[in-house]
Image 1 (spheres, each protein chain N blue to C red):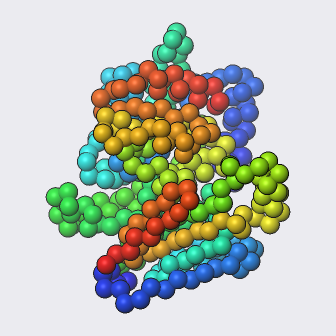
Image 2 (cartoon, chains in turn brown, cyan):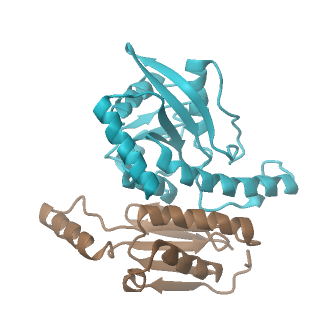
Length: 130
Length: 212
């Protein structure tokens, strides 16, 4: 993987429906294959905590075995429900149970391209390497 | 899955028979947040011995380390813990980052390799914990995804959590920011290095042990 001289930036959007029925291993593998291809992945929805942990584990195993692979940067943006009224929160909660948390966005990039993802509750700043 | 069920049944049995001996207390967090400094302070306070080496170079702890039978006394009560200090969890490891701390290339590469294995080890140990102290750097951004991932995994495993905002001796430390980021948890601001607010920490720790 190239480290400093980047000629372009490739974003890959994965719709929720595309990963919805995959197992944890398949989902993580799909993401990491794109990352190894130097793409920034924008996943509709969020990974479950155990999937995030698995993603970190598999990433570390790859850092150990793939030359010049340094890992990933990861951030999740979620809609803010705390300031919404009870009914909206309840509707969101039911929808989340029924169809999964498709309203969130997960951004994952190779650490060789994305230096840092600065996150606060309402925005994400992607700091790229020169 | 088996580990989660085993942990859950252990918790049920504990609550039925009220046994709280040798509570496995994990110290989790990102690298350089002060997990080992805090574990050292506790172990030194109650056993006279430290648990591990601390350093300014990230990923100093690269293997899970323990201290068995640490008896802590607070307001007339005694609890026995097994202190489990874990390597810091990160999503990236670059050996070049270590060169800036004066390490030679060969040493830096070795450290990076061990650090990746340490992270995997930390994650695999999560299911074995009875309670976890998440140690975060009070001068850093609390919204870091690693912090959220660690806490999310503890919630999913139904493991009681105490959030510690360490390094309050630093000018940039902002404990309130951590309290608003994790409103569901008790956040204790401490300085493990200077021993500030340790009374408040022990009080929170005893409250946490009640949830085990």
